[in-house]
Amino acid sequence: NPTVQLEISGHTDNTGTYKINSKLSRDRAKAVVDYLTGRGIPATRLVYEGYADTQPIAPNDTAAGRERNRRVEFKVISK
Image (cartoon, rainbow, N blue to C red; front, top):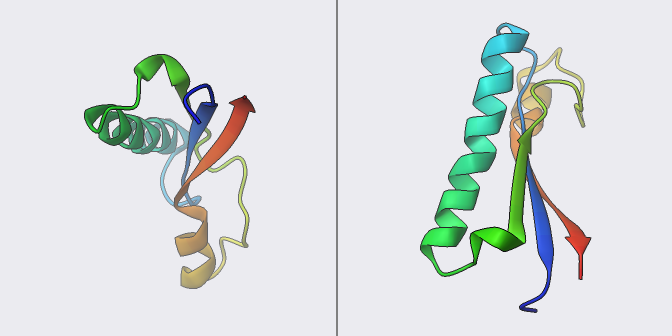
């Protein structure tokens, strides 16, 4: 759909400082945006944000949980 706008959000586990995780999560989301724009998706349809370790989807007390928290999510923000 050529009118859909997406938010690309980067996330990290809780390893490291908030400052480092904030930059890492933002860089992670930006890498996805760069990939998509490099394949023809207009940048005007994409926004990105880094959320560091503030929105975990799994406990950070196991390697498997930390792995799940290191992710990028896509959210439709307008159609």
